[in-house]
Length: 213
Image (cartoon, rainbow, N blue to C red):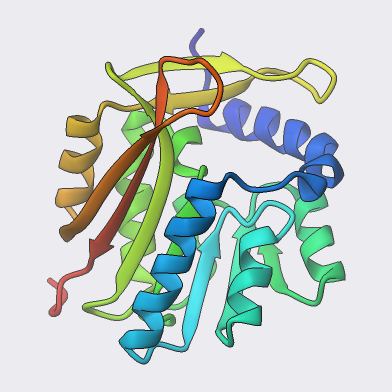
């Protein structure tokens, strides 16, 4: 199934608007929490105080960053998710990773989990370059996505929430290569899906270049 960026984003917006409140009540997987907490420790060790989250959803990770003492700002594609974040006292606005509404070098770190998997291969470099643009040189960027043994695109979801969502699942080699075009892949880990599946979660910390081109 081929689709344009506008069509993909419209479907994602509808789906996550409908799912936002249910998603807020769901617990994040233990592996995700462990790797997020490790990233928090890294930021604390480096004396970093500001972070941007791209793809906040209803704000579960952003709340954890705020409660750890960070100045956190964020964006999400779905207005319903943004509204839940604002209700929780978070500074989150509606936007796309392909056009981040922030200044160059505005943050000391970036975090995005299960968001870049909704970005088509043709747009992936733009998304990563936007993440790199809005952080300071030498900053760490944490990226988590679902991946597969072989790179592929597909649509799926729960029909009760709306149209099927677009997913771009990438092999470990393909994701590492894409990240490596924008900095140094400082760490790269994977773990299997909790349910029986051919998918696995990919977690990377990308270190941006000390000097910008």
